[in-house]
Image 1 (cartoon, rainbow, N blue to C red):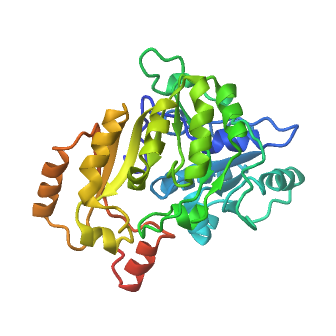
Image 2 (image 1 turned 180 degrees about the vertical axis):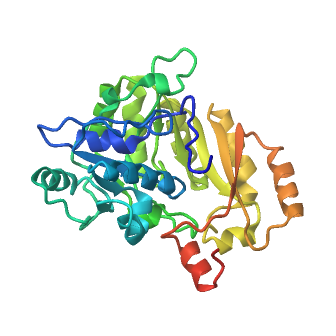
Amino acid sequence: EAGTPIKYRKLFLPSLSMVTLAALCPPGTEPAITDDCVEEVDYDEKTDLVCLTAMTCQAPRAYQIAAEFRKRGTKTVMGGIHASMCTEEALRHVDAVVEGEAEDLWEQVVADARSGNLKRLYKAPARSDLSKPAIPRFDLLDYNNYVVPPFAKTPLIPVQTTRGCPNGCNFCAVTAFLGRKMRAKPVENVIREIEAAHPSRVFFTDDNIAGDPVHARELFKALKPLKLRWTCQMSTQIGRDPELIELAADSGCHETFIGIESINGNALASANKGFNKPDGYAALMTRLKKVGILAQISLVYGFDNDTKESLKRTIETILSWDVNYMYLFMLTPFPGTDLYATAAAEKRLC
C-alpha cells in the first residue's frame, strides 16, 4: 500500500543524532527515542514535543509522522540535513524547523515549547563549538533493535570526533551542512564518550577521520590503551601518510570506508574530486590490507561520461584489488550541493 513504511528487522547501528540531542535536553525533561526504521510509532503517546530528523530520502516519512501527531494537537519540530537545506518545504509539514546544528539552539527550543511560544524557525548563528562535553544517551535505546556482531555485547556504537571536510566534492552535502573547515572535539571528550557507552566496537562517523592529520594522530594514540576495535571513513588522501595508516591500525582500526567514486580522471575532475588519483588506488588497498585494515570502497555512477562499458571496466578493475566490499551509488543531486545547483541551472532536475 502506498505510504505504508517498510520496517527493518534490525539496523546495522544506531543513529547518533537523537541520542546526542537527548543528552542536550535541559534538566526536568524526560526524553524518549523511537527509531522509526525498526520500531512502531505510538501516535497516542502523551508527549509535549515530537522531534524529527531526516535525510532527504527519509523526509516523506518524517512528514507523514509529523502529520499524525499534529492531528492530535502535538507540536512537532524537525532538524537534520534535509530540513536545513529545504527549510521552506519542511515548514509546510511541521510546526518548527531547526536549521543547522542544534547544540547551541536546543535549550531555547525546549524552553519555548514549554512556555507555548515555539517559534517557526531556529537558525544556528554559527557552527557548533565541539569542545562542550555531551555524553550521548545510548541508554535510551533498545539494543535488541540493532545487529550485535559475533562475540560482541553491544551493537556497533557511533562516535563522532570531527565535523566538516576540507574537500569540496560537488555531489556531497557535508560541506554545505557542516562546512569545509574541520572542527574537532577534544580527544579527552571522545574518550569519555566511548568509556560511557562501554561499546564492543565503535564506528567513527566522521566523514573523513584523517582530514585533520594532527587531530587524527592524537586520537589514534589515545585509543590504543582502550584495546578497542573500530571502523571509520577515510579519504584516499591518507595514502600519502603511511605512518598515519599504521597508527590507525595499531590503535584498533580493522575496517574503513573510502570514497574512490571513479577510476575515470575526467569524472573525478568534473566532481571537483581531482585529488583522488586512480593510479594509486590499488597500492592504497594493498597497504591497508598489509596492516590489517579491510577496505570498503564506494563508487558513484552516472557522471556525464559514464557508459555501460566504462562501468564494466571499472568493476573488473576493482575486482583485482584487495577490497572487502564495494558499494555502487547513483550520482544524485542532493539539495544544498553544488551538483544540485548546477543541475537546476541546466534544467536537469525532474
